[in-house]
Length: 210
Image (tube, rainbow, N blue to C red):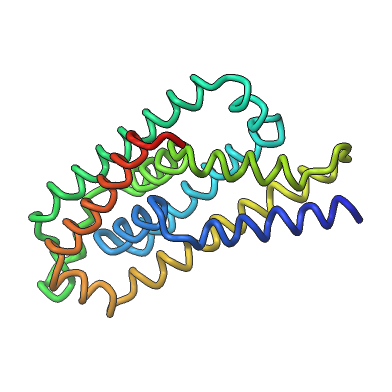
């Protein structure tokens, strides 16, 4: 019963964290709008597997590692900030690129492959030190002192389902025809806003003390 309560508590907190807008949401939204639903789902799977990496590390004591090895978290934060800044610049520079749509008599033009969409999302997730801290902190608070083999066997798939499922919902909503029509009409401005926010998050991460 203690293990089931711990699993429910961890999953509940992660659901709230996943639904909070941040770099992961921006990446899945931009990929879904600029490419297709399939690309958005590929990105969602990347987010889910990235979260699974953090969950596995948290089970192994990631919180203790960050506490004892301060420079490791600092290096991780620098890498994450630089990656977000890189993504922001890339999205900003691609704002002027025109997409070919079905209305223009052609198949929608994807600016990247499904594998690329997955990779960008996965790297965004695992380079996010805030996500690492959330997972390590939540596990440190709620994980029982002693667990059975069933604890990770139930918890890890549940977290994968939660993270992937939320972003699949985002991808499906933003890749719908109405959403794409709004995006195509104001693509340059939307991409510049998304790129600017991503870059700002990267700079904030690089300059923050936390």
